Length: 380
Ligand SMILES: Cc1cc2nc3c(=O)[nH]c(=O)nc-3n(C[C@H](O)[C@H](O)[C@H](O)COP(=O)(O)OP(=O)(O)OC[C@H]3O[C@@H](n4cnc5c(N)ncnc54)[C@H](O)[C@@H]3O)c2cc1C
Image (cartoon, rainbow, N blue to C red; front, side):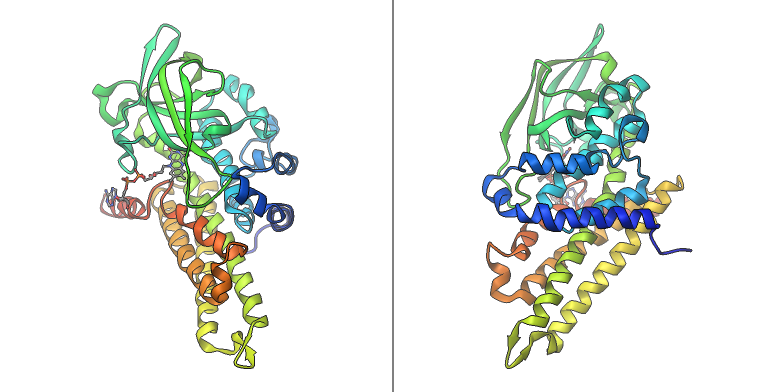
């Protein structure tokens, strides 16, 4: 066993961390104020290859395996979580279906522009009446000649307002139950009948825009069917499994940042004539944060390794996502406590992380759903 990340991946991490802590954090106030990512940051991210993390080199991407991608996601976690959210929704769930199931023609059509950051991607399964119960979606795709006609509404879809491509899951044969679902590559900006609803007003993760996607007799070319017709729920959800490992890695990066901020603050803030780091109550909070970082890191590394070795990670991806996101909530809470009143102030990154991290226990499967998956697998 070797617990050291390869040197090239440590280099990737250092570059992304520097970008997040420098360029992105410098614009955090703008992102919070405008709820938009400045275009120059998107361009810099593209130049760094962040939009092509999961795209093979032959299509202009960086072509990292899961270990490399998650190492990048951990580094991404150090900075503004809304910015990180845009990149990760694109590079993980937005891209992985196409890379895994796409034909050569489909890949050649979309992946080079996606890798260059010219076509932002997203993934749409959730509907107003089916969130955790994603097997119950109602959006229908009916084959008529050489098109599929889509009708239905997706909501809370990350990146939808800026997306050039969405992987959309719809029912193609209701009589087959969960085996009657298919995946489609939908270009929301150029397909008549597809519209994007009002941008969601969220608690945090500013700049990471999500919205409804409405299909009203939207005609999607049959050539945009991704994978086989009636791909099935399990396969469609497989796209999310890889995303879960990535979220565990991002959470670990966020925890590391919060721990670093807390250690620095504890050493410099003085009360009762000494640094607050001298108080055991504060030391214990720091120690608990470190335990959370270390256990979460080992877990995502193990699951990423399993993916790269072709192992089934359904259970373990849920273990890693559950652990890291639950730990992150505890770490964010402790970081506010160590910072005291300052941690409650808008100009503190700790306040921002406290709001932003909450989403990670909800999307790509809530914590409860991760436990349903883990228990279901144990009892199978
Ligand atoms: C900002 C944001 C971005 C998102 N981005 C995307 C995206 O890009 N693409 C996409 O498809 N979706 C996206 N989602 C949707 C997200 O995946 C769902 O919100 C999530 O799966 C939960 O569904 P729900 O909100 O309908 O909650 P519900 O399913 O209604 O759950 C409510 C509560 O009930 C619990 N619960 C439900 N069923 C069970 C059960 N069987 N056992 C125990 N507890 C249960 C849940 O854990 C939760 O605590 C996003 C959501 C948000 C908020």
